[in-house]
Length: 333
Image 1 (cartoon, helix red, strand yellow):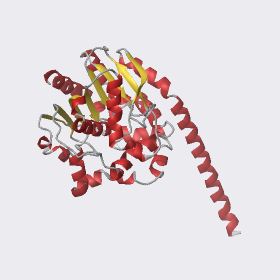
Image 2 (cartoon, rainbow, N blue to C red):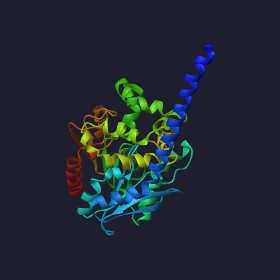
Image 3 (cartoon, one colour):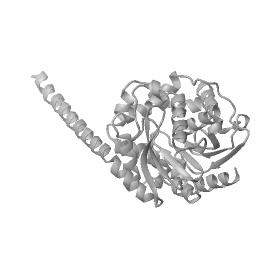
Image 4 (cartoon, one colour):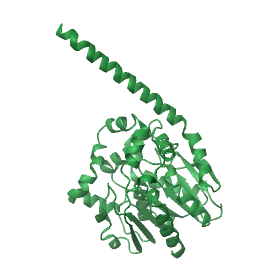
């Protein structure tokens, strides 16, 4: 009799869990299917002429938002984890009005861009090769490159390995690769902040967990970790959630972290010689301000500006400050 008494609650719990998971999967698939329509609505909200297209990367296709005069100087905007082109919704209009031709791609593996399977495809040299290919597909030899978070890591490496392709470099809360490597080796405070990097080394579980409820994940990752929480509206969160709900996207995003710890760049780190602006939100939950100390030793033409009472999502949380600093730097560079 005791076995029977235990059987029904366990069976009921299993059925309830299965139903909840099935509903969650249906919601995720529905949200993923909305990505294209949400993209077009977001483009209309930019209030400057813009288009959604695809451009070649290194053997893949990158979904890219293009805006601004075709003959204007090119600015390439590289988003971070777990975002998409929409992270730059406040910067695209400002740069267009300043006369720039703007390209904001979804990085490989993200949103509507191609998603090759396997961590080896997300080694840093493939990521920089994508941006070189994109610049050349637009008929240019070089561009102003702006990067946040993982996009900033790609931008740092692009400026080191291919300085001829970078006119000016703008980094937003993305540590210099050498500084980050040293911090993960020696700084327990940064190691604690970076716990998720080590969690992401687990197979399959992180991506499964983070895609159970994409909208809930978006609320937690963006709104709850922001200092200025009003930065993300429900519409913003829905667009970002639709991007991370794309089939296979979260696995690819996390493969960036797997590749970073397992696969070395082809070249050694060198000094960044191009004019560089680093904008750093001081209250970043994931990256300590200490990562910016001593940066000028490897970046001789550096301008470093801190933004107070602002979190990791700096271009979303403080768009006015970011745009002002960005445009001032580009005018002077």
